[in-house]
Image (cartoon, rainbow, N blue to C red; front, side, top):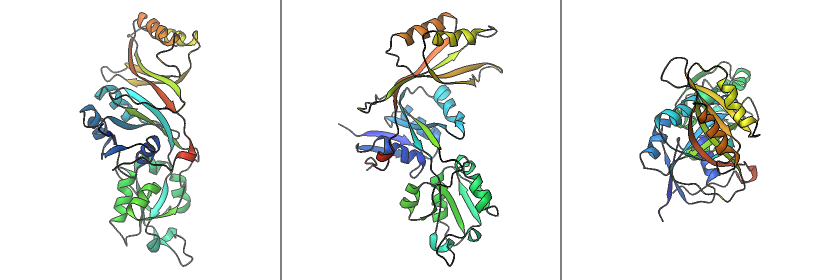
Amino acid sequence: MSRKKVALLPQGTVSDEAVRYLFRGEDVEFVYCKMIADVFQSTANGHTDWSVIPIENTIDGSVNLHTDWLVHEVDLPIRAEWVYPSIQNLIGFGSELSGEDGRWSPDKIVKVMSHPVAMAQCLQFVRSKLPHAELETLSSTAEAVRTVKNNPGKGWAAFGTELAAADMGLDVLERGVTDHDNNFTRFLLVGHTLYETQISSTQKTSVLITLPEDYPGLLHQVLSAFAWRRINLSKIESRPTKKKLGTYYFYIDIVYSLDSVLLPGALAEIEALGCQVRLLGSYPSLPYEPAKAGNGASSR
């Protein structure tokens, strides 16, 4: 049996840490891509079995670009979701950036670089420790760490993962520099290949619901179809349809399996109201177990 292939953002990113956690102990091949479009297209074109998509963050909310790709650009079912901590660290050449006491010295750092989202999550640290430093954003945290590695002697540092620091032979100058301790990212595994797990998990279903135009009170009726059946919605978000100004679809995450008795009836009732319903996937929502976060999958 051939090894499964997984497309994801560059080596050393939080996506890399997260997918190693998901496939810990399994023999899978990781296919690293520079841009999220390449991640999606790798699976859509059949080069990989799944794509790993960061879809939501504790601090920044939904990643709208990734949601739009999932909705408008590809037709890849959601096969699983899981959360993983987004921990950013200050990374650089310790020997270059340390003072006489052996600790890193803020005065020796002239520039800090990272991905825009990671940079935004570390602004309190920047204001308190590095207000003088120039800030530069790059395509990924891993690219930022790589840029620092390739430019020794310039006083540059990066916000990135411990994995990236270890891969590139740099030092973690200070750990956990994000503004909030409870910073988690929710990831989706998408693709045409089924994903099987023995881990006990909650079942979720994601749908898109598009309402007909000029129908006052219809959203209330849609939500009522779930409410009277006591079906729990963990997320409801509106996004533009990209077809006409002022028209939106609703992205809804439902804490219920499509195999249950009540959910198909709710969706049928919503369709009977004249709404379009598109199923994005019915899948396991896997719990995060910190004790097992360090066991990576094989990625030969």
